[in-house]
Image (cartoon, rainbow, N blue to C red):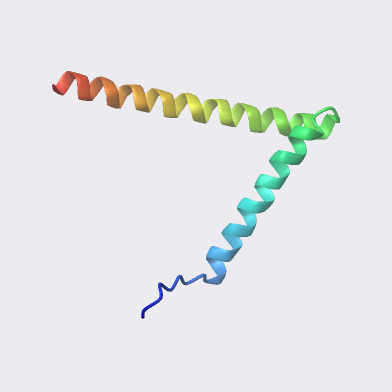
Length: 71
Protein backbone atom coordinates (compact mmCIF):
# COMPACT_ATOMS: atom_id res chain seq x y z
CA UNK A 1 0.00 0.00 0.00
CA UNK A 2 1.37 3.38 -0.98
CA UNK A 3 0.96 6.39 1.22
CA UNK A 4 0.84 9.91 -0.12
CA UNK A 5 3.92 11.81 0.90
CA UNK A 6 3.80 15.55 1.44
CA UNK A 7 7.16 17.24 1.48
CA UNK A 8 7.10 19.93 4.13
CA UNK A 9 10.35 21.68 3.48
CA UNK A 10 11.62 24.48 5.68
CA UNK A 11 10.21 27.17 3.38
CA UNK A 12 6.68 25.74 3.50
CA UNK A 13 6.91 25.37 7.28
CA UNK A 14 7.89 29.04 7.67
CA UNK A 15 4.89 30.14 5.58
CA UNK A 16 2.62 27.96 7.76
CA UNK A 17 4.03 29.63 10.87
CA UNK A 18 3.55 33.06 9.29
CA UNK A 19 -0.12 32.37 8.52
CA UNK A 20 -0.73 30.94 11.99
CA UNK A 21 0.81 34.02 13.63
CA UNK A 22 -1.17 36.32 11.31
CA UNK A 23 -4.40 34.52 12.18
CA UNK A 24 -3.68 34.74 15.90
CA UNK A 25 -2.85 38.46 15.53
CA UNK A 26 -6.16 39.08 13.71
CA UNK A 27 -8.12 37.27 16.44
CA UNK A 28 -6.27 39.10 19.24
CA UNK A 29 -6.73 42.48 17.56
CA UNK A 30 -10.47 41.78 17.20
CA UNK A 31 -10.94 40.99 20.88
CA UNK A 32 -8.66 43.80 22.08
CA UNK A 33 -9.78 46.45 19.59
CA UNK A 34 -10.60 48.84 22.46
CA UNK A 35 -6.87 49.29 23.12
CA UNK A 36 -5.44 51.93 20.72
CA UNK A 37 -2.66 49.79 19.18
CA UNK A 38 -4.93 46.80 18.59
CA UNK A 39 -7.74 49.08 17.43
CA UNK A 40 -5.43 50.47 14.77
CA UNK A 41 -4.40 46.95 13.70
CA UNK A 42 -8.03 45.83 13.63
CA UNK A 43 -9.02 48.75 11.41
CA UNK A 44 -6.25 47.84 8.96
CA UNK A 45 -7.33 44.17 8.89
CA UNK A 46 -10.97 45.21 8.55
CA UNK A 47 -10.29 47.40 5.51
CA UNK A 48 -8.13 44.70 3.90
CA UNK A 49 -10.95 42.17 4.33
CA UNK A 50 -13.55 44.63 2.99
CA UNK A 51 -11.43 45.35 -0.09
CA UNK A 52 -10.77 41.63 -0.59
CA UNK A 53 -14.47 40.74 -0.47
CA UNK A 54 -15.36 43.63 -2.82
CA UNK A 55 -12.74 42.47 -5.32
CA UNK A 56 -13.96 38.87 -5.10
CA UNK A 57 -17.58 40.00 -5.44
CA UNK A 58 -16.82 42.08 -8.54
CA UNK A 59 -14.87 39.19 -10.05
CA UNK A 60 -17.76 36.79 -9.41
CA UNK A 61 -20.25 39.26 -10.92
CA UNK A 62 -18.00 39.72 -13.94
CA UNK A 63 -17.82 35.95 -14.49
CA UNK A 64 -21.59 35.60 -14.11
CA UNK A 65 -22.22 38.41 -16.58
CA UNK A 66 -19.75 36.90 -19.04
CA UNK A 67 -21.42 33.47 -18.78
CA UNK A 68 -24.84 35.09 -19.27
CA UNK A 69 -23.61 37.06 -22.28
CA UNK A 70 -22.05 33.98 -23.93
CA UNK A 71 -25.33 32.02 -23.75
